Length: 181
Image (cartoon, rainbow, N blue to C red):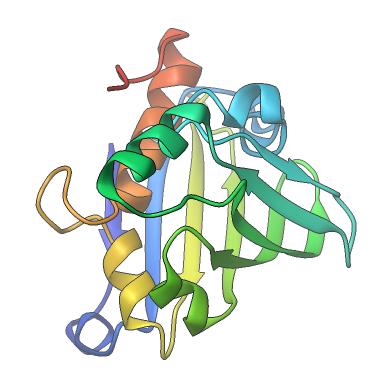
């Protein structure tokens, strides 16, 4: 189960997105799936990401060859680093706060850095943890539209955070991610 919470005012102004997913996995496995490029390159948009897990450490997510090829077919270049940022806080396996800037498209890139918070709670008696992703996007209408996930399936930004988190849940619970391509 995934959920996206935003008030009517937040949706109108595009300030904050809160996405939650409940995953039958330990906090340590969820943390590893978020922060380890061997895991985070297996779900969502399959773009491996590297973290320096300390305050002031770097964050970079890399374009895959498939992304570069698709971008070339659409007539626009795809940079090697598609998202970058800085780790603001790392408290394994419970909380990760970072800045996040989309570099694949010049419009959201010009909007600058947003703030992204990952929080892992649990597990409950049933072995299920709650993963919450809070994305602060004040003054970033293009990035908000790309990440909210309420656009047409497969349209601008694909399924956004709901797609990524649903695929993460599927991978951790079944060992397989959504089909790509």
